[in-house]
Image (tube, rainbow, N blue to C red; front, side, top):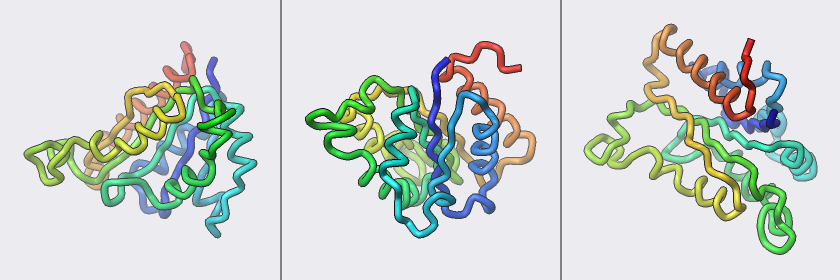
Length: 181
């Protein structure tokens, strides 16, 4: 079984229809360790050593966040800037992430149609996620197909429940858990 580290970044999770529920599901799974960046670091002062330790214990890194202005919430960017350091994540001796799996789990209030070349945003959502993929490649991580949920603001309870079920199944799959019961 693989150990998953889920990094959660949402500045106002109580207003989230999807992200908070996905985080809570992940938090209940034995093979998933979770880090809620906004809860851990309300003053924005990230404990790099603690983050390094959490990363070293994991085989898989999952980043769960809403897409805000075509990117991630600012604390996740700060986390990447100061945690994924030279000598740890890349560069001479920087092999801590090498071979680990990398997955984005993102939500958008927009529709899947809005993230097309003909849609409102003019490009696929993966276009906006490219900097994260490149970071993973640079750190020699193995990219895993992202988990993307659209229409976050307009999904009804049944649709949200299906997103939750699908996300839990992906976490079990990533962790190599064959019997989820």
